[in-house]
Image (tube, rainbow, N blue to C red; front, top):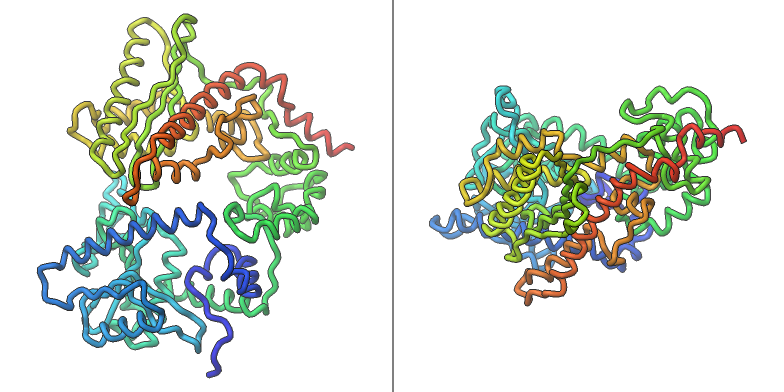
Length: 550
């Protein structure tokens, strides 16, 4: 068979098809392109996590004979890594770290696995990723019925695990499938029958291996691989379309202007929505803005079709926000506390910022308070700062109740805050001041914990997105730091605590505190604006829809 002109890496099998086409048609630009700071941060975090798993694997088998765990040198060239991997397989090593498989030029594929684990007469691939790959099965419902398989991290022993549900990340599954297909062709799998094959993923918690049956994944992989190969060979044409991935794509400076020039409808609706619109002939923003017919048959059930039309009108007219309700509504209280949490990836929450407003006592200072740990995460000191935050918050809540005042605490998008509220109660259970999980759950479920992100969604259509930094400026708020963002804060945190052996930088700690304070002040300004000037300053949806009559 003639060698393929294209070789696909597993990362080429998911995500934007047009990006794959551009990468393949401009390889020199791809090679010369530096990583963005955001991409480099993700790579560094993933490398740190994999190094930790590597050291854990080596430590778990430190009492076993030499050669049980083989570490392939990641700094050596590709050919050397392949040779070392094949030699370890021939020697029947039990664990092979950083295993690099020979590039398959006939089929056009390459790949490496953080681990190959010996299973009988062959190997199973296990990849290590820097995200969560399972979550606790809901208690009280009998678990998941044993549909999730896991294995301990110190051995390969897959078994049903009713306590967990797997998180099915398609990128991970396609990577496992490509590795399995390559191992099959090399004769290195425990069986030649795909129905007998498995693969595994170790996630951020590194407390188990989540195991996948490979037969069904291999079928999906074969279909995806065939299409992606055709795209890479330029036999299936692609065109740009805005999707979530575009935010961090290096090709966006090229695709964005092209989409704007043709006023592509994907600039104002999500990916699935633009596909549904295309099926009824709507491809431009102008067409959508003037459309009066029925919504497409395949329109997503959780999206209002009128919102899409309004987003298109807003794009054409420059309207930043559209009012859904005649009277915007947001829950208010006598004593109000705005809360914002800062975390470092999956490692923990290092800062809880608060801003208290007593609407019954104008003489009481509206004061920002921060509860932080500056010991590098993960650290037990995180539990101490969380306990202090929780003690202060619940103390203010109790004091308000005792004085006959109503109380509410506010955040912007409670998913993140709730995760670390519950996670901190679980991880630091028993430490001084750390509340029982049930107490945290009671607070989260109460009317006194208010999500302003949800309030924004109920009251407004947000053509530019519902993020705090998109919406609060409409209410008149400005951040002091022009570079303020969640991604930037990750770099500031590394410098603030001196990750990687660097000297901690107090200036970056101050920067993080100022950023957090601005976030809680933005939440306060936004909710007070919703309850006041928003009605007069934001046009109602019915008024905006009159654009179609022009």
